[in-house]
Length: 120
Image (cartoon, rainbow, N blue to C red; front, side, top):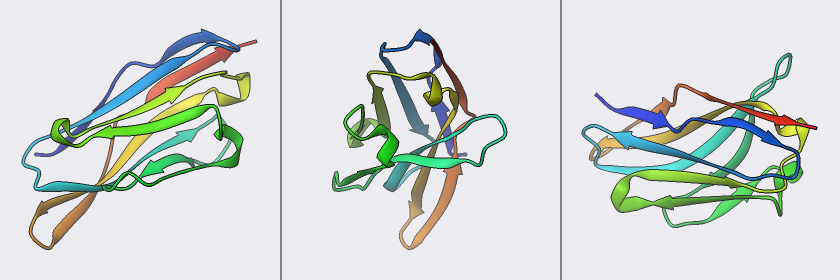
């Protein structure tokens, strides 16, 4: 059984920093792309940042220069370093991974979500 387990989010003041992690466990052959999504109340879920197995990254414009996504492949873990946080970053954050279970077979998995609240 493959699971994605996210670290706790938290409450932080505007301008502060927070680091999220997401660890994949279970029988995993490899992990392709991993991404962080977020969903604020009344809004659609949006992709915040993603990273390929080779380390290429992309970010939504609103977080460029403030957020950094990284991954530790041997640990099957992805991180999201969030700096200069703004109230509009408040949302539930989810990690998502395209996990290769065995040769030629991959599935999409989601973490349980973690709340990040930025106070003004």
